[in-house]
Image 1: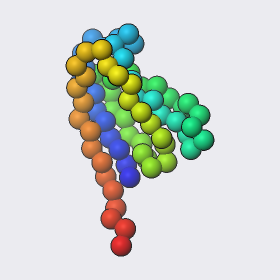
Image 2: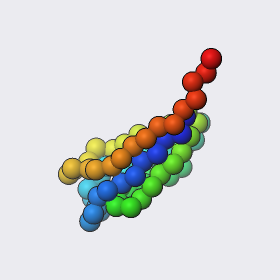
Image 3: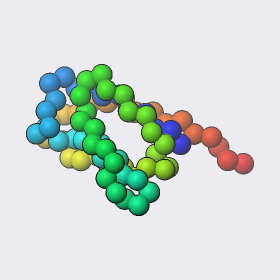
Image 4: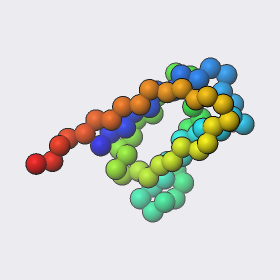
Length: 71
C-alpha cells in the first residue's frame, strides 16, 4: 500500500509537534517529517512502520492510500 500525505500548515515549528516518524522493518528510526505547508510524503506504509506524534495546535493535511486488492 502506498500512503501519501500532503501538509497544509503555514508557520509550523518543531515545538508544535505533529511530526510523522518513519522506521525501518526493525523499528530503527529513519526519518522525522515536520508537517510544514507544501510538504508531500509518499511511502510504502506496509514496509515502513510509522507514527504521528501529538500536535500542540490544529494540524491540517490531505492523506491518501493506493492499494491493490489481492484475490
